[in-house]
Length: 173
Image (cartoon, rainbow, N blue to C red; front, side, top):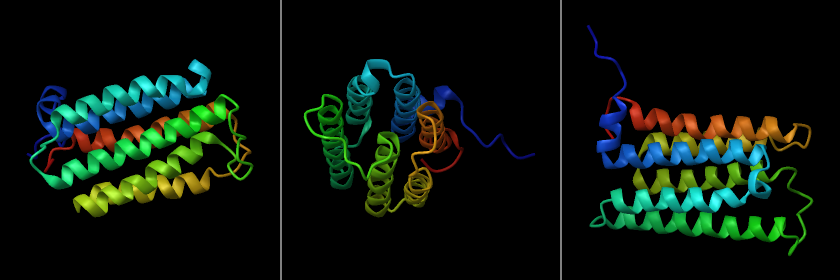
């Protein structure tokens, strides 16, 4: 009889990489749902969620490995720049670009491109697949015809589920 294909929550939390994926899955899922409900003008909660997730990642990552340091810094810069840009848009400091129909899909595209870069850097196939999936889905959702709540709920599922799978799937992590 084959063993159950997923590890327990306790095992996932003990393993550094699984803990990182689990934390980001929760941050992305919660963040997109809160954005859909327009909590904190739709973006302010992302600052706290990102700080918490990056803190967990910083603590769990093996800092002796240059690849992991590069990935952490790359993601921190990407997310930081995106948060600043989003804050400038929502505070009306800069105009909302007309070519972006929905800020959530723009973020999914940004995260997808970052995930593809991480997959190329880490040479972990599932990271590359997640990046391609996110990028493709961002392009599919790149129409203004979906209501905000629908888009944000879909984004919560699209971003959180692959990370949860990586965090809990019994296999190399």
